[in-house]
Length: 50
Image (cartoon, rainbow, N blue to C red):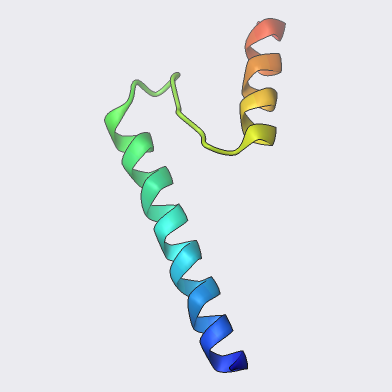
């Protein structure tokens, strides 16, 4: 059971990295779409500082 859990976690990390890679290559360099709420907040606050 523990082995299955580690495989599941590894697959999820791989999918997450694929999504980030997809958005990084398809969107304008200054516009990154991030699905994580903390990252979205950081990006918004960074944009306000400019």
